[in-house]
Length: 112
Image (tube, rainbow, N blue to C red):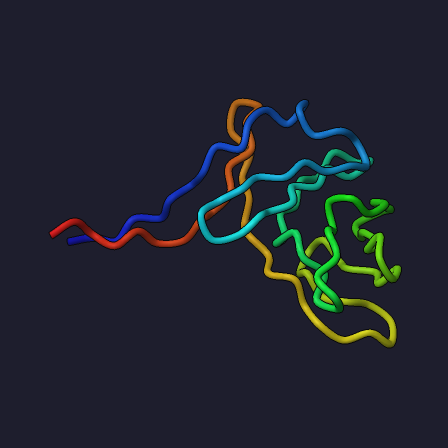
């Protein structure tokens, strides 16, 4: 059987504030969905690679977010910490269809 990617409907783009975020809870993790001033959408695990701070509560500037706990700067495009800091927040691919945000949750195992 063919494997199928599961795209989770997060909701409308307009539900995520410009230069802000909203969170989505899954059974295994919390995901932060960010919207930049230029209307780009990104999704990262809502956990800073430094001490696990909630990235969704950070300040979005350009294509980066500042962790609210210790000001680590995380690149929204790939989840990598910038500057002298090292670490990575898990990134999730996103797509926009008909004004809705979809997050790629990975491959679903085929039913037996």
